[in-house]
Length: 422
Image 1 (tube, rainbow, N blue to C red):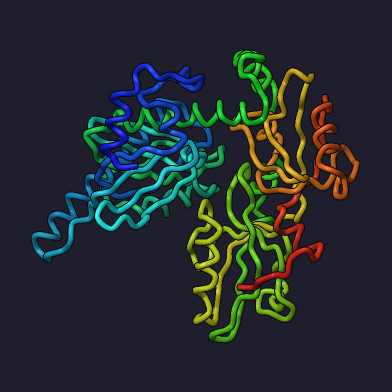
Image 2: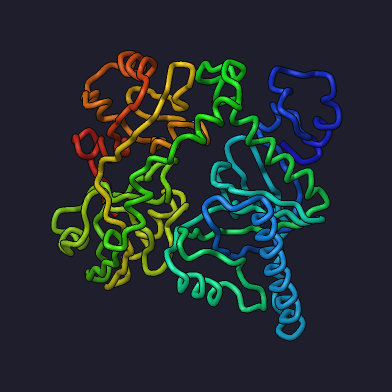
């Protein structure tokens, strides 16, 4: 849909309201489901460190800092252009948004510059004619990591907001855009989250009016987040560097799969290793290990296809350095559900978790999209029919314990698929 067509539809759709129109915002909710486009200039990105759940005022301060950094870089680029005849770093783009994702397309070539699932966006800020999109990336563990981040991503006088050493810090990727529609863009992205949430509920047969938001919020506030990752990733002994030697032109010899949405650090998992391949021969990698970086390049938050391309590009190298977190292939899940009024907040198809409600008790319990359920409350459900699994989950209350693993890994381990090594 062209920008003009979208704007015409926005201006004329004042009376044709559907049930979705109860979601407040500047756009017709049905347009957000299909996707709308805004014109903007992409000015660049920067990295900051942040706590997992900072206050709104802290988020805005971070957004202003990111904008200031990128503007400083713009000024430096313009100065270099005058002296070295460089091409300016800003790019005219089409900013596509829907209830699924935000894509950035080059306005001239329509090539995709970025493809960000909507769920990866942590905060949106509009400051004048600027829009800042903030996406959380890899967790870092020390003050020295912050100092290194400042040195490698910014040479201006700006520094990160003060952070506490006793709290885990996350690398925030901040993308900065300029547009006359900055406020409308920010509001539309916020509305897209609301529409996506309601669509998820309806797709799973849930009436949002059955349970008040206050009741659900009160329940969440009484529960700690249960996720082995929170403890597992914080232990330094589980995170290690692995050096692998191989011949030039030889593949690494692994199959990787996505860790799944719901992971504390969304990255890729080693699902299989080629017999006598470099990865297996190193003796330092295991099925289930999550790859954080390869030769210093972070894989956290990247699409699976991008991670595969990075690994395929290693053929010409003889020495590879991976940073991995040692993880078991099976993920432990604990959902606390007081009674049947509280929806679990995820859907299952043939034993595979295919959607997850943002901020629900299932997400807090460690449920991950794309994982196959292996066991529920000590009972194997590997060969259990879909209807039976749904029935077990629908009627389960109290503490619900599950074991899951990435569905693609399960198919490889049970020889349902042949591995394609890279």
